[in-house]
Image (cartoon, rainbow, N blue to C red; front, side):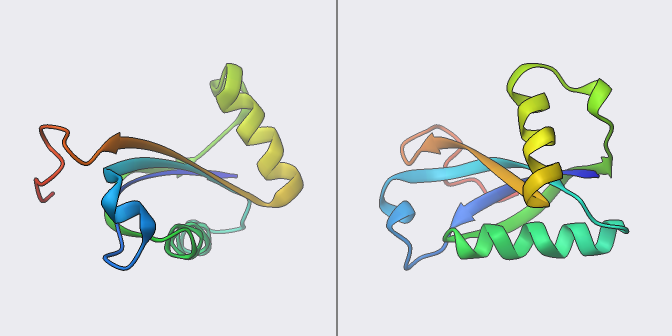
Length: 100
């Protein structure tokens, strides 16, 4: 299992563009190698109407390091092979227009 966190922006043609200034996305992906996990997560992010601006964290993950909802996401990724959780901020947030 890999944990990857991205900083993302809405795709211009996405309904998200009018509502959100951006998001951090936490992804739990069950793959054999990190590069496959990253590619899967990026595909899921794109399908949801976002594009990745940067990778904030990526590492092999173990269930014991997570608590609460994060542990539930880890467990769900064992079933579904991948889970991405979007933590959005409003379009008028102070850093909404900053490039990373």
